[in-house]
Length: 586
Image: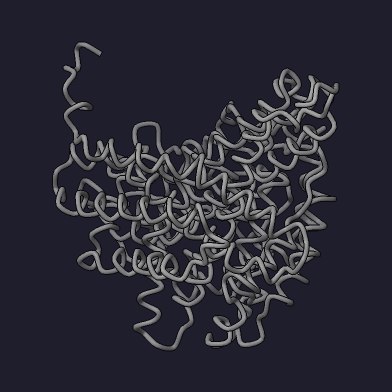
């Protein structure tokens, strides 16, 4: 078994209180005036206890048992149904949900910090409430009053679960190719016919309803994405007595046999004339679904962060206990944390996790500002920041998160390759985060083709100016050598941004540069958060933490941030090295 997971609540509180000015920002938002770092810490302490004591112990055995399909019924891993019931009863599913529909109405910032802990403790479990929340948000934004009245409270509270059904065998990233159809009925409902694959949380044995949001085509729909509509299709329909016991005409055809997240039932779903209802406008289904998709993309980035933290925690514990080799003075055997190469692997994890958590929280605060600030100019600027950061957090956090789990596994040596140690599960589970909810290459293309140039590039310019302003205020006694490296990296990002903007419409040039630009953007953004963390660290007083942060930031500056130059060089090289080889010669 891996080391017991330690919820990072103290660090989260430090970020909210001293790095991100959480209290002052929430005080400006109607409905959040009483939100504070103190309240957030109290909530997260209780939530962290459930993650550590209830969810984490189910992670390794859940992976071994997996979900099963028996006589057409999904059987989840032992303990999952009971844990989900406890999770819902404690109110965690509706933490940031609208109080009008049974939610607790806390800031999204607190929700994202809970998401990190749930993902670290048990990613397979975390997908149930995470997808349910996404379905609730999409329904709240686009559903009719009638649908909201029936379904929204059940979803917000987690009493019912949610799932989204997009992908088909011949329609993955290019949803314009999907074939599932929706035939109108006289009563205003639709008959949904088709098969979807890769449907996370498509079904389970929790004894409740599962509300699917399904993309399909109306009979007269044009080809392409403009012909797609969104439909709400529940697993259960009300029977004659009004109780939700009648099975809709939908079934699980198979469970996907996956590399990781074995305890999560990823389903092939068959809709055989299932009853559904239109959500939003006909032909605008993709627009409605993206309310859920964008929320899920941020959620997936947080999954990468959570897994990186859990794996690093376990690796640090092991490195302190495992005796092997001799120290610099010739004594031994010594704990392997004494060896420089092991320290590099551990520091890589810590140097990523700390600023990533800060950047996630900063983005979540901007989401709260976007949703609630009374000044439309301030709200619009926050919306733009969230749009800009969404592909970065999804892709970079999962790429770096996967790298971190691999390094943590390496610390364990041969034991890391054995299931009982738990490390190979972190690696397998982290791998999907780079793929689902839009592969990281798709996120990078979104960044360079849409987000960099949106509103004439003004949001990007404002974001880079914020980083430059903090660089200008950096105290050399605290921030060097990070500040010096950040000035160079920011200059590289400025130049690369100009290159990207000038390449608008050049598919090959943007495609060749996309992932390089996203990673360069992420490295600078994480460095910015390190600057802010270092500036706030004296508030911690005479403890080891300021010194620890300084050492981690120094590692980031000298070992990780120099990768910015590599990405910039690849962007400057243009598409020719990528496109020169003829297809038949590959």
